[in-house]
Image (tube, rainbow, N blue to C red; front, side, top):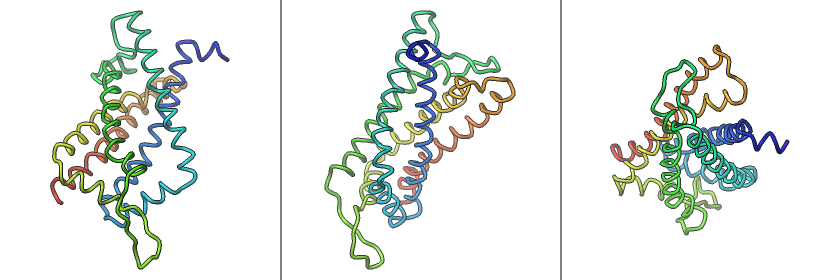
Length: 224
């Protein structure tokens, strides 16, 4: 078993599994964030549910570990491939067409990491370790953090952060556009029929993620 995961294929397998896990989390995270477009009550209730749900509390450290493992194995694979040949770790799609994203996956991953750090500092850290104003709805005696005020305040007050967020969403979409189908290819879905389908699904998924995360700062920048 150790021999499998120490091999080149084993490393790619680990990176693929962690990558797909992170992409599933992206959908959940995007769904909650889109509640910002509905209003403060919808978003605060969704954010409070995520913050107090015991399942999410279990998943959060697993997610963090998965992200670290993904970065480590991506770095190892990239360095090993550069030692073997002066090209990216995966340089072309199944149809033989080289894409910019496929040649620059490691660079894209690095820029996404920078965006994630900025995101964690401005939102995750303040939400979990800062002091937020409280709010309650429908004359409920219980109250919750007014996370909406924090997020909307940042987007409406700093246009340059909106720009950073949009650029980060686009880079994330580019990273996913190749990583999605490449992960399934590593897991064995590599026949011509399925790879063609997965490439299409990957582009759709990437557009949905990039567009979904970009709409949020645009909404506050233009309409608020």
